[in-house]
Image (cartoon, rainbow, N blue to C red; front, side, top):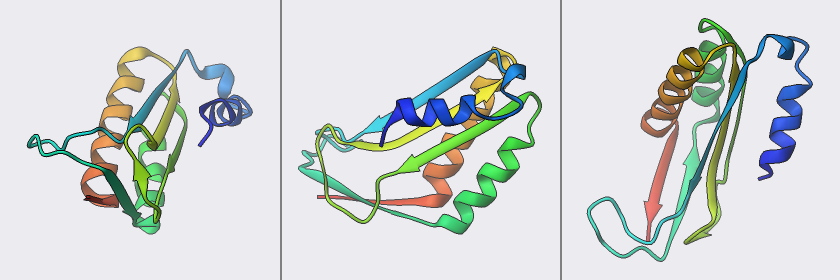
Length: 117
């Protein structure tokens, strides 16, 4: 995963001149689960069809120029490893923040399955 390459890809979008903001999310493996248990690592699986559908729908939201996402999957991830990078480019802060939040929540609730070990 390379956030700089993802950003450069977004900047190549022919509509990038309409963007006033690119917001980035970089999820990493943390050392504890939500309930406080120690975690040694993580494995993620991805429903690519659902991911493509969500990205397509979210790109249609008001003011959105482009969305890029990359998820580390089907390999063991250690504490501190990148799990997901999500970039949303759009016109104004309110639109971009809302779409990043909605897209992230949709991905985490319907696209990915995590196994902590």
